[in-house]
Length: 258
Length: 230
Image (cartoon, rainbow over all chains, first blue to last red; front, side, top):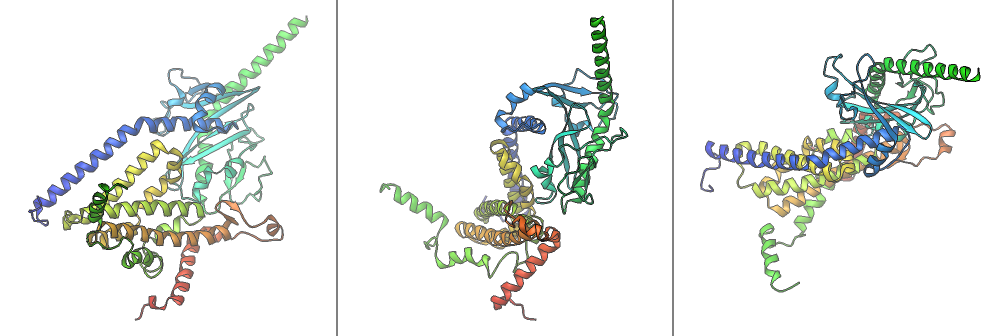
């Protein structure tokens, strides 16, 4: 082989073929042999993220145990707010789901029970500046106050858009309301003009934006409103059920008193 | 060390160092030190400026990027140097690209499986490394024509020269832009109460370019042989 002319066509082809073969098989081998371990990491991270929205901080390895303990329901919803019990909500990939027609889409939601409080955790997906961004938003039992939020991204600019993963940014969502006083869903805007950089006003439906990350911030705003709107029918159904249950309870009390 | 091992080590050293030159001879040391000043990839060769603007908002990503580029440049320079007598001239750029890209993909996969937290921190930079002009520049200009050990030193040296600028720029941008260093607040609250404000402009790319420009100015006024004559 060494005798061959290095500039000849046949040598070039031979070299390219061997190189492509070696590189492709090495990469394919590593990717497929590590796939299981990688998926495991991603799965545990998903549990870790869901837990952290309701204020439970845990390392990745311990996440599974606590997840099973606190997350009592994993529900996949249809567009009309009814439950599709055939699909495991945890396995739904929002990225694939959003490409389907709206009627076929399923909307996952997680219900957590911690001591006496109930939380609803909604997964989010949207677009940042460069690539997809996603996260989880936990709502209190009233279904309007935010308990906690987690965001992540694939390729936002380090130090700017990528700051959405930081605690101080996610912390500012706590206590904000997603529904205004007229009972209309308004979401939370990541705002550059809210004059409330300390986040003291919890009724303004706004959090302070990150300097230099306008488009990622707008992506977060759109993502929250865009995903939450699909859950409103479900929340209404639940609220009605709660009211009904309260009425029955009070009726029972009256009967018992009689 | 046993006597039987010595010749083995010597012959394996011969493989990377044919002229029996000391490993850190003056010439070889220059491969490491030149890129820090006289032949800096960013301020003199003006390569890799794009990534220098993007990731110098904070010190931490700048340091992480420096280490990643060092690893990639050291290793890819070695591989290309080993293959330098086999690579067909007409497709050499493609070969270099394939080597860098596949190594980067490999590192990415291994980190994702075994060091997921590091992977999460690094994955964005790992993608950026492939597009870093310095990597290709050094492969083309140095590794294709030099021995393995020299190429290794050249790769490390240039990556260090690149990282040196990155860290300096990131230092000033983080300090003046957000009042922090490595994520910790260094400007006391008292200053803010007295009316001091962080300079938001420092967080945007144009100020990175201006910071690099000021550095080039200082470097050339100190090291006059760098000034172009025309």
